[in-house]
Length: 328
Image (cartoon, rainbow, N blue to C red; front, side, top):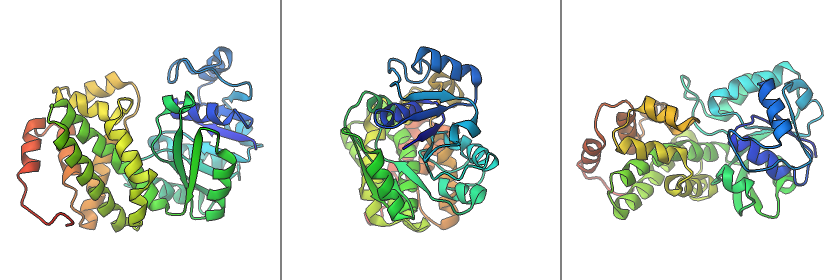
């Protein structure tokens, strides 16, 4: 199966490396100079250093040429670049089925990725690849499990069967909304957990945040049409645990730095890569408000990101809210 990966960041590169072990893979990037370096150096020294490209992995800067013979396209652009990448696919006439791996809600519209896909391309054979996975660990060949969600269950099963590797287990599902909400909101919760750990609030507080965070994700996801059981799986609880506790998590690192009092612009510059929880927080907050869904942890994160309260003041406000039933 010929695979094309659109987007040569850390995650796109890791996926290309993993799948090139069994399939011919083209890794596409917009920047011709970046593509030349990738092809010459045979590694992505900027985003995923130390991981050599397999022989079956080639690079291209021409999206039409890269997708011309593709049996499957993986869109590995960050969410901010999803719409543009889909427009590239549309404009070059590609009819290949595809998966997207970005997580979040589109800034300015609040749309989930599948809704952006529908706006740009209409109905297509496609789905989301998501779940608890760090690019660095996947590239190293460490055991990883993810899920592919598509409204076409046969397509999800087909992709899972053909993409699985000895140390990459892939499950199939048909709850696209649930899978996307889990992947989007867990990034917001990771910022909250990073703040909690950065302030030294202890393991009790971390456990409370993870548990109530999952409740918040589920409440929001159900309001959008996701199924409750999805949030107990890899794209929900699994991704939440990894992103909130793993030191490779960019969103967790945002929270850790917020706890020290650093302003968001300085944090963003220091990271050098996108932390999807930052733009997602406000979009989740606004869409939840429109649905009448309470999201107290998300609200807290938004106040931290805009600098309207200090981290410790935000913790106090979160703890002093009115008492409610736990399942409310």
